[in-house]
Image (cartoon, rainbow, N blue to C red; front, top):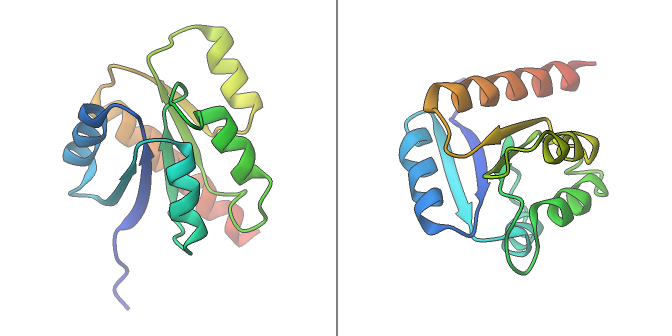
Length: 132
């Protein structure tokens, strides 16, 4: 059986950042982009189930923390790894993200090799947790 590419949902209100992530990641992953957490929740509510989510924090309508809280409350979504991708480089924001349930935190601008490593690490941990 041939397995397809892993699916990644990207949430960011900056269209250039969504396009950049799609460009950098599309050869290895199927990328789905939405402009905020509310649009991401709508996409998930239609039965879509990504293998990983990358989300910004500061977005209109629903920010990354509110989105993360919502998916962590749902049994079908609460184990999906989430990487926060933010321009905020403070340790306080990084620690808050991890306490809120993020798998990892990446600052903008990002280095493609670094985000690939974080994605693979989060996906690997998720796969291991599914076999327990």
